[in-house]
Image (cartoon, rainbow, N blue to C red; front, side, top):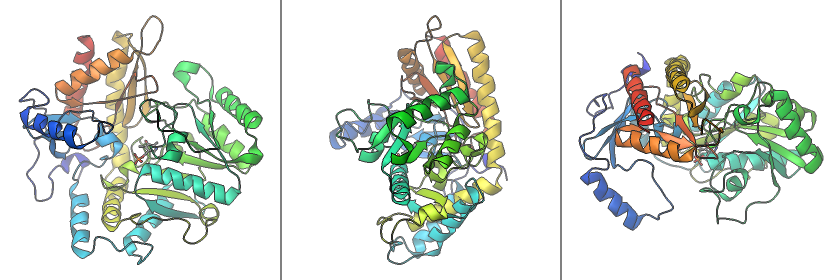
Length: 450
Ligand SMILES: *Cc1c(COP(=O)(O)O)cnc(C)c1O
């Protein structure tokens, strides 16, 4: 069965795979919910698409007014297997009927161990590995830093320009962008340092040159003797889908190996077939010491993991790692179902197909419109960067206007980038090709109208 054929939610009606706009967006029922939201939920919890979602699957999200929107965002790279994937839904239902929680640190259960075994097998490298489970990407990143510090007995951590690692205190410190993620929320955790990223479209450096620039800064301003870990997204997510130049990541990994520094790949956004490989590290031929994963891992259930070299993972004392809900049974059941889909239903090939459709269409658009400065990405993680064609300066206003117009026309697109001038495409891999093409037609029309 192809992933595109798995559209029927278990026990639910088949969702018509179509773009259907029957009211203004938001329609009256959605507006009613948004009014309640404004009164009950703080303004800090924003939203991108002004609808009240009532169903989703395949390549669409349906709202309370009967609008059916083409989903090019997957709830931020989460529903890669498709929303309410039948295997995921069945696994959650079966587990819920057995038990919902024991706390793994109180009474262990098999599904947690099975998720750990699967991740130990699927993550890059054939060294001995261990996995600990958590609830969110930020929590996984926090724990990866804890684990690296305990193992190396060092404290400093390097993150990169444009990095995004989460919204908790330590991960805000690791994250680069002030607005909206950090502004006013300090003071931030100490011993975090920032190095320059490889950003080929803007720095014009080769991978080797960019790595030398970063490593020189690290050696001069921090010192390997003080450095516990370097954390990096192999392809940056929120920062603008920045793909580093060839050779950059291998040079950084090599330097880490030579200097007793733990190399952490934050694959929270890039993991699980999204980039046309199970993990993006594979695309760059690197083997991280630790990998953080979340988002796509469990078909929409909250679950996160740190997987890494057994000797590093085992350096933390008993009771030093964990959390009440980490590796919740429902989330683990969902993850085992989703991981089975990733491995056995051809999702890596599907991500590559989706990527070709995205790259071909966006490149064709770029050829006729100089305001698209760069098209980049791997697999089904692709972005277009919008610029002033004369100066290459970021054009955040155009980007926001195009994204708003797409949503009004029933296509969910997300923006990103340090300069807010990137539209990112992260469709669920269950989206039918025609729907993906129609979504891109809407993007093209929205751009042409501006
Ligand atoms: C989303 C994201 C996080 C944070 O994950 P949450 O589940 O939102 O805490 C961390 N790192 C990367 C690369 C991400 O994309």
